[in-house]
Structure formats: C-alpha cells, structure tokens
Length: 394
Image 1 (cartoon, helix red, strand yellow):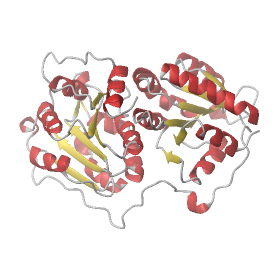
Image 2 (tube, one colour; image 1 turned 180 degrees about the horizontal axis):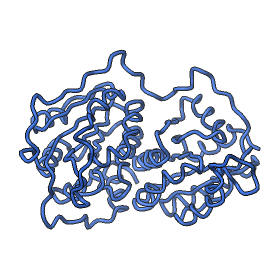
Image 3 (cartoon, one colour; image 1 turned 60 degrees about the vertical axis):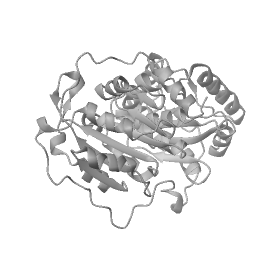
Image 4 (cartoon, one colour; image 1 turned 135 degrees about the horizontal axis):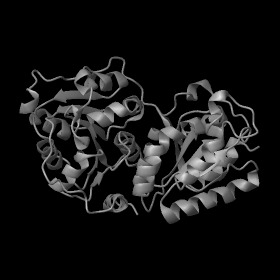
C-alpha cells in the first residue's frame, strides 16, 4: 500500500497537474489529496467519457514551455462510458493522458454483483482499445518506474496509458470540509435570465448552417480564438468554408466537443475558445452543461447550432424542439445564455467582452447541408498538431 502523496508528488514531478473523473471509493485518497492542493486541479465530471475528453483538451493546450499532463480517473464500471472518446478522440487525435482505472470485481476478490462481469473483462477491454496497461503500483519504489513507462508511451505515441488499481492500493487520506468543492466557480446569488428571441421564424425560413458558420469565421480571429467543431456536418462545413489553423474538426466522440473545449480553455486562459455544438450532440451529454457551469472560465463560449435533426445520418428528428437549452445553461451556472434565430444577436454575442464565466448561445437554424460536402483532407492527428503549433504548442 502507498500513500496518496507519494504517487501524486511523483506524478507532479513528471508534469501531471490536472485530474478529472468520477469518484470511486478506491480513488478517494487521490481525490482528497488533490482537492487540498491549490496548485493541482481536480474537476468532478458528469461521466467518465467527459473526463477523458476534458483531459484531452488539456493535452491540446500543451506548450513547449509548459508541459500539461493530465489524469482521467474512473471505476472500471464506467469504462464503458469512456469507450467512445478513448477510441475516436484520444486515439484518433493523439491526445495522450494517464488513465487510472479501478478494478472492481477483480477475479478472486469479493465484490458487489454489478461488478461480476466488468471485473473479469476489464483487461480485455483495455487490450481491445489498444491501451497498454499495468497494475497500479503498491510500493513506493515502483511508482516512479510505472510513471516513466506511462510517460514514455504517451510521448512516443500520443495515446493513453492505463494503471489498473486493485483494492487497498492506497492508504486513506482525509478531506477537509472546506476543500470538498474546491475548483468550482461560485454560483451567482441570482442567475441571469436566458435571453430568448422575440419571435421565431418558421423552420424553413431560418438561417443555414453555412450562413451561421460564415458569421463564426468572421468573428473568430485565427490568432486569438480556437474553434472546435462538433462531429458530423458541422466540422465538415466549417472546413469547406475556410480551413484555418485555429480550427479543429471532431470526428466521432459525439457530444465530447464541449468538455474538450473546457479542458483547452482551462489550460490556455490566454486563448478564447469556442465550442461549436449540435443539438444531437448536446442532448447526448447534457451533463456537460453542469460541468461547464461549475468550472467554465470566462474565455469559453459554447454555441449550439440547432436544426432539430441528426443531419449527417439522414435527418432523423431530435427532441431539441422540446428542450430549452438556454434555460438549462442558465440553471447550470453559465454567466449568460442567448437564444436566437438571427445573425445580428449572434455577431454581438461573438464579439462581446468576457464575463465572469462561460457564455452560451443557441442559434436556431434550418436542416440541410450543401451537396458534395468534402471531408477534411488533413488527418485528425495533424489537425490537432497544427492547432497546437499555431498557438505556440509543440
């Protein structure tokens, strides 16, 4: 058994200062230790996939002068929630991170019935996802070598490495009450009201996605603003409109663009970060609204382009017409929330000065996309490297 301090300080010496995850009793000593050190960051995520995406965003903000390494922590029962970003975000874009996965239901160790299947298949899941793993160190002398193997793999491949934690690996570490919520932004005593459109156009009379993206490009200077576009036609249309080095086009990992953007915005407060979301993606990971409301910095903006359908899969309807996204953002603690179907308010929102927290806007657009829409010719990993290099990263 080791002390939380021994592992966290050895990890800090190797650049690991960011932690995100969903709690497990095995992880409690780590979380408690990190929460009580103001020079480290722990973010409590709504689900394990969001934790992976957020740490990927931290990696996207890496620079030569400030190596940013992060740890995504989860119980193995939540590994399934992280499969999508682990296979189509971190693997595809080569955004490395250390995973600490607790081994509930380990064969031969008595545990609760819900872990009876996940326990035996955890190693196979990691192997299938091509994530090298080893058992979490339980002796002080083994910590450094394990972290060195992890960082060597991360640096060489740009992909995750996992430590699988068995029961009783880390000694208990108490949490002071005042540190329990450390890192979260304080909520205002009265939340701002969502700004809603005075009228709504008929769906067929609304703006196209291309018109909306053209406005986005016009108001996001490439030298100061990173634009991360959601999976599907959003990224493809942005690429077709104007391929710029400050833009990243998500593939797969539906719903993960917001935690990815949050990680980048937190790691790089010198940049303005814009997350371009879609209604299907937002509905898949509504928990990200609460995370952004709690931790989101002033340099983060979240723009939802809502056409009411899954456009890239044939136009199947979503339930977004019944969802008040601006009200959700307001209730979750965003500093402001706008809903509109007009370019004028959108342009003003894009140009508005920062507030004391993240801004949200929902732009109602019509379904449809241009014919013969190209796919980006630049590989996802090259897109990530290009954005990092553009903003002074390696």
